[in-house]
Image (cartoon, rainbow, N blue to C red):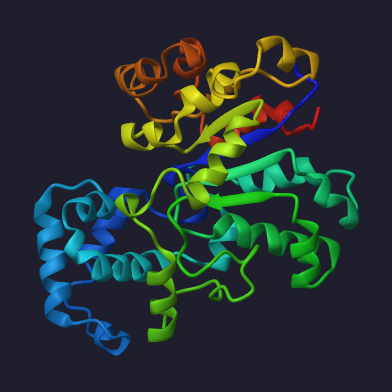
Length: 327
């Protein structure tokens, strides 16, 4: 193991499934089901525009709302509003506490391992762990804050301060701001007012709105470039998402991209390349080969992923628990 440890967890939709949130295809179906919902008018949405959007989405063959919006940029505002409305219905405290569905209580497991033996004032030292997420939902941050508040008997501001060492970057924004860093974040729960919906729309960024060199993308690449391990959890390995992360540059050819000799990395206990690991639960051997092994090629171990096709997120973390230690 390296003296230097910085683990970056890259989260896809499957990472939020245990906490009640849908994958892309299910969210698409939930958005389509909003067609004809009488409550939408009170939230400032035009009935005809919503009906047309839902009709076309249902017939488009798109696997997700995001994919549909890549082709229909003129429908961005109504599309983001419907994403926020559908997804916010899954912001549920009870689901966060239970998490009995596929994937298990992995927030619970990870936090309990990280916080074991720690006092409130020592939690900021957990800076060796970061999260880069492609998800809009805020379940991870909300759960972490609630766990610190209840577990250590402190208020929200003290919990935020205690967790300041953990970074959670949302590459496509959130449905109303991250409670970990945004003091004006919308309360956790379903959208019920026009103001909340406008907040969500302003906070969301679909794929083609983002420049992969700026904002959260730039910060994410800095994290990847200083990592010792990059761990994909619940990630679908979409080619476009992989390409935008530029893993070859930031995780494999660091001595070239940073203009430093490989010996410098070794002398300073800093890995000249990151180990790439993760889950691929439910993927066939052919899908793993096509979507992971081929595009990532020399950066990954074929056996590492082929042997993990039956492990959910919690099961994977239990097998790789040593990654949660800072050194």
